[in-house]
Length: 203
Image (cartoon, rainbow, N blue to C red; front, side, top):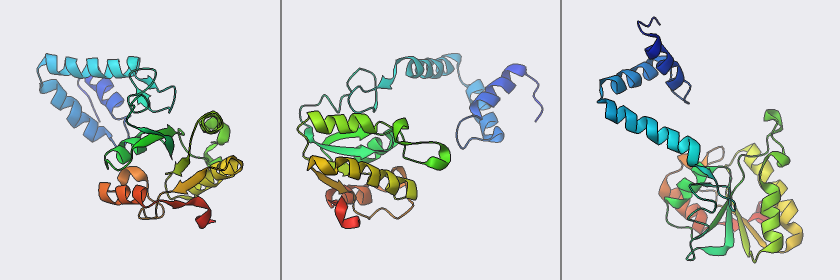
């Protein structure tokens, strides 16, 4: 692809780094932005800079937040005895969109995957166990994707929690095997949360 402007080429190259965006799609986006009033593009640049500089991980659940403790964790109406364990922030958003869950979350930051070089120490599993040890937690819901890596991570966490004598459940298999939570429709995901089952029944 030939460019008549090095600035245009640089912008296209950066946009094409985004997931699912090829060079042609990136070019269409950049040319669209080029046609917009400069203040519109300025707003986009400012929003991206603010996101990069100010978003942080919640000190409690590891979800994204603008402050040290996110609004979900600091909400007194949430049930802090119930924790839903998810892989990443997209899963929090997916479950929140169902309006069926009123507890708190714990974001692992991924799932155990030896093929990708991701072990338990690369995730926030230790801080989850610490919460159980020092908190008044009654139930842990394992809401990881129905993949071999998700099942491996579920089992690893379950074995660590076994000695703590708390309820460990998993979302009902309304989510198809191999599916990621973020792609499930809200009704199916909501029902899977409501009709969760004890984890040991899967063993």
